[in-house]
Image (cartoon, rainbow, N blue to C red; front, side, top):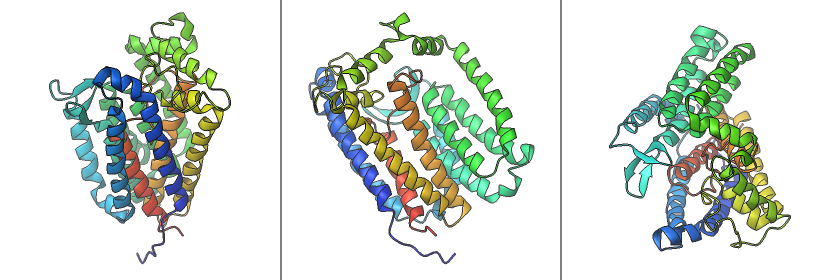
Length: 365
């Protein structure tokens, strides 16, 4: 192709590493009480986060230096492997149940979450598929239905776990790639209406989801049950004020707020670091999304552009859902905050995907 390679976009690296640093500090602050109570070691979650952060940074610098066209060659086999893992995790005795969902493969405290790998696998495959068949995307049956069918199959397998939050992120990032590749808005609007009907069906089919919806609308209807997490999250955010209670001074982490180191870590950030700390985190995500979209716009070809759109879409959708849940705008879904929440598969995969984004930025026109 005769591409010329330059230095990676420093304005993607800086916010990513700053978010990771804030995450490491806040994981320790949010989890120290819980870790001591459950494991007798207040550093338990911090140690795990450091391990996965190091693995993720190594993976990020590796993918930053691997030509993004490599992913085009292995996109199909990567997607097949992701589908196989999604099927295996559903087998009782193999898939590990955590938080009410059979979504983990592994032994003991260490494991991988196949649905996290599927998000990236789907982005790579859709980017390959749609960059090669872009002229067909305006046709409903030949252009739009095939990528939607593959996305729908992956979403269905994730919902069997069940994991609505991860499924929503996968669908959001996938639809963004499909839309940017040139799909007709009219077609997507019709499918959107069908999707809303299906979403309502999923909610009705599972009573616990309906409880989450009613708790979202009025958490005080069931303050010790379905509305408990939302109420405790708001109790954390409220006292934070402008500058917060101070690092390590959270009151809600003392067994009041469930999952303070994962799903609700932004509540602890707002409680300890206040409006200023929360705004800083949002600003860093905004810079990352802006520079990622810039990399997509200036990418050397359609495949690279669609990968960049998918990665940024995945990060943005996950941030919007997580913070929306924390501040009471969305029902509780169990989605982590990228680069900040405690986690293994999610953190490592996010940093790996940023590495791919950085590689694309090296070939910007």
